[in-house]
Amino acid sequence: MDLKKKPKDFSTLFLDMNAYFASIEQQVNPPLRGQPVGITPYTGPTGCVIARSYEAKDWGVGTGDLVRDARKKCPKIQIIEARPALYQLYHREILKVLKAHSPYVTPLSIDEFLIHLTGSDCSEVNSLKMAESLKNGITKSGDYLKCSIGIGPNYFLSKVAGESKKPDGLTVIKLNKLDEFYKHLRLRDLPGINHRMEAQLAHRGIYSSSDFFQANLVSMSRMFGHIGKTWYYRLRGYNIDEFEVKTKTIGHSHVLPPDFRTRNQAVAVIEKLVAKSGYRLRNQGYFAAGVAISVGFMEGGGFHKTKKCTAFSDNRTFLLEVKSLLKNCQIWRTPLYVAVSAFNLSRQTGRQISIFSEIERSRRISEAMDEVNDEFGASTLFTGSLFPAKDTAPDRIPFGRVRYEILNF
Image 1 (cartoon, rainbow, N blue to C red):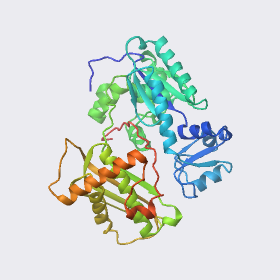
Image 2 (tube, one colour):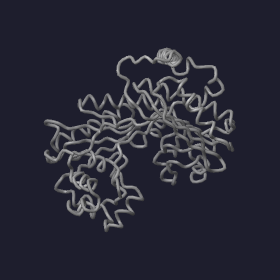
Image 3 (spheres, rainbow, N blue to C red):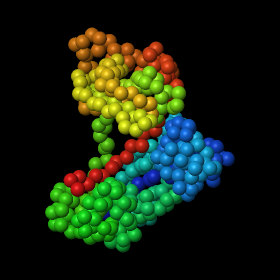
Image 4 (cartoon, one colour):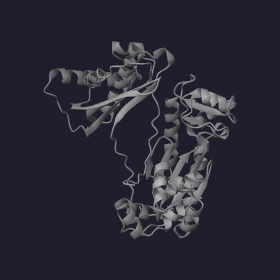
């Protein structure tokens, strides 16, 4: 926590694309414009809405709704299967627009970006001019794409500002106006405050964002320890948050379509998820020393198991470790979703050759397959055991976020 640098106005710009996935679908398919749209990994009744247009939101369709429930709320909703490659293409185009205006751009997720303002940009006139230029540049990439922008003294407040007015908003938070600004926000409007935290704050006499801001440093420290001190300074615009999101796990999950809701088919999908996770592991330069497996059932409940193991990066070892955990699942009902992940990650340093020939050979095979698939497209080359599930669990978009947590509440 660096408290030596006092906060200054117009230091940070936060940009959030509005209804990003749905807007892109409306961009490339004009008949969808003005229509309620829901984006799902799987378009069947048990598919899950991962994004929706503002028109769908107006009908009460929420993120996480099942397709069948979304259709009940909004009979006219258009359900579209997610197209990750398309969303990534637009992400890169938007990133080009931002980098043309500043070299200090940090992508926080596929639809959120942070810009550290420096020099002459740290003024009201120039920061607003940049914001308008960014909006215009993004519109040139797609006339139906809109974004909300927040400008503030730190990341936290610029994000609060950006999310306070959607769609197509532009909001500035100044240090001398913080008291007034917090009066118009609920606690749940602050990033990191969920229902449980809101209840815990209320237990300590903090019922609103204004109460939270007005609490003095001594009482915040007494009630919440170091975390209370952190929040005290964060709410006042100090730059105390790290923007690098450290990867703790690498994995994939998938809701099984009806014809894959058997034990054998679920295991085939698990193998596909292992292959995808293994590729990401190597691509990001990690070894993993732990694996996890989860299976959820239609009837409710599920199976979850983790284990630590010798560090690996190859698919064969990954799969063997996952299958060793699956042996503990004694009661198989109707599987609904499966998930695998690798944890205890460490960076690869140089070329570490395993003393075990089987492991070394497996890693070389995995890396060779990566090279072929990078050159000619995903799933160009795959093992025979993946054939039954080769068309399932397509690539998805990660919803990465920098999150705040109030610990020890």
